[in-house]
Image (cartoon, rainbow, N blue to C red; front, side):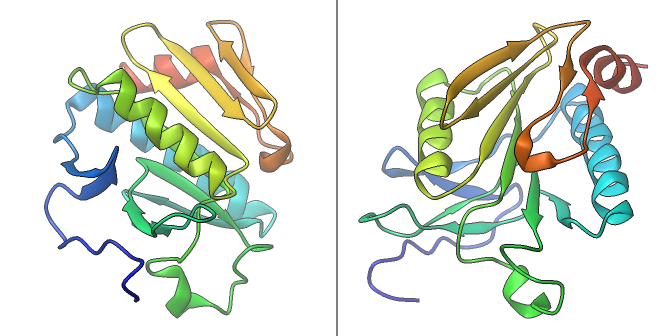
Length: 179
């Protein structure tokens, strides 16, 4: 830790540093929790099958964009590739210094658009390959990466080069979560 790092206390729910202020995450609704759970299940199965990396929910990262203060961000779901942090680096994986390989955020009714946009920009600036925004109200998935963004709707499949071999149908995700 240095004077160039924002350190926030651990809270329930977690607190992040977004748009220059401490922002406590909202306690999720059932729909939010169910979508988050389905993402974790699908990603863990994929990641463990190929020894690709770690997957976790509400996992705190110390995100360090270039020439900016290190700040805590807690994606709803995160994938961190073993190429970034190898399996033997368990201690460093507890609260990694750096960004997840892919961050997933499930929108809550009280999420502010500017806050979500700031988190997407911060993750990408810090080296995240993709930020995936899941919108329960619209039943869409928006994938942000360095090439831009694409919106996936029912009938589409979530894939990304940073998740080599992973595929999740938008219909499948929402149908399983909304049972």
